[in-house]
Image (cartoon, rainbow, N blue to C red; front, top):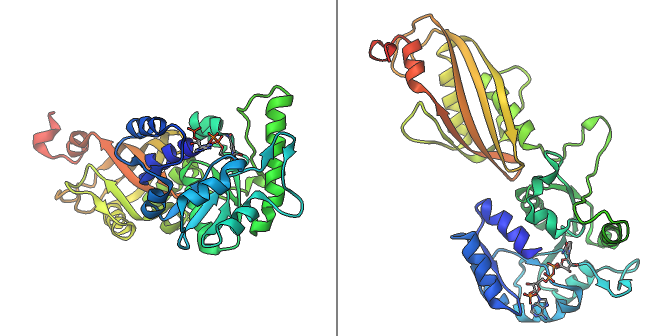
Length: 345
Ligand SMILES: NC(=O)c1ccc[n+]([C@@H]2O[C@H](COP(=O)([O-])OP(=O)(O)OC[C@H]3O[C@@H](n4cnc5c(N)ncnc54)[C@H](OP(=O)(O)O)[C@@H]3O)[C@@H](O)[C@H]2O)c1
């Protein structure tokens, strides 16, 4: 579990430290595979290194792992530990692994998450089920720690569902046991996952990359009824555009840039040509069109109808689009705008 989640989080730009193994070379190999965002150390090093800790050790090792970690100094401790023993759940109904861990690590804020998600799903990448992200139920008693956990669940390409107080771990852990039973007893193997649904598809508790990309196009086009930019773009959104030499950094600056860009056109429209969503990144090709009525790229209004196609590679993080890398044939746009030196190209 630790290796799978750490790999996905590092991919999302987080810095991770792996610790706690009887074979430290295994952790070193993992770090080499992941690269610059990963390192290894002792459990104590990990506590000093990180703001958020993941406890992903077998139930029988929790005391040993927590004592190796030392003081947790109020940090958020995400536990995916299931209290599995040789005869099934070792605690339940009147307590849970998460509550026991919270008692043992009383100087940490415990959130339970990922208990029902098989490690194999994480290793084969969370988008195994297309844009139907598997659900991760999380529970805890501290709102900020839960918010952090929800973001980390999203960053692993999964759907966070708030399951309430830490006590509700008593219901999540048996569900994890059921998943194990299904995978072992009914020959379903472990390529299975849970997804919470409710009627009318109004359940997108987290917008998928596909939905975010479509909303982004609506915002770019200035379409009536488009979602607000803050629901779609991260506050520190960065756009690498073919129209400017330097990236546009920050959602507000980008909104200003879009308004200015659109103001060079009347009847501005956008159509999506193609969209591919891999759960973490979305590739979208779209074509905008409009009549050129204002200065664009230093070129005075031509009153020509312009149509131009761009390809966007969008990085999704924390349920918002964080980055947009745009490729487009700018020579073609300049030629359409009648820039004489490009018109013949
Ligand atoms: N696997 C799943 O699909 C899954 C899904 C949901 C929740 N969970 C829960 O997540 C937790 C971790 O599961 P996992 O499958 O990731 O476990 P794991 O691979 O067996 O062990 C996790 C880590 O603990 C280390 N470890 C185990 N015993 C140790 C010991 N005596 N001394 C030092 N290090 C030790 C392992 O290192 P070495 O083996 O290299 O020594 C490994 O780095 C469990 O509580 C499980 O119930 C698992």
